[in-house]
Image (cartoon, rainbow, N blue to C red):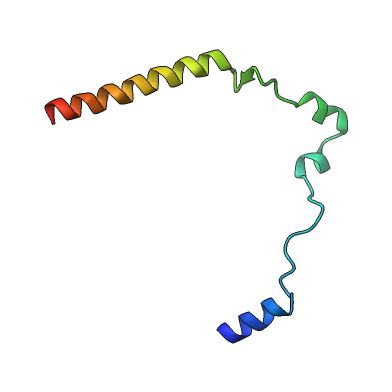
Length: 74
């Protein structure tokens, strides 16, 4: 099996993926719908970047607090 796999790899039977990719969204919708679907970088899934930054900052403080409590009380 290993010899056969090596032979197939050397013979370039496994040529890799296609050079041009196809998108199901581009095939399914017209170009005007795709242009409208471009996401705003300031609004990520209904949340602004500032809200995400505040959440990450609070999450980091919470993780540090949990580590400090585990070190102090075990």
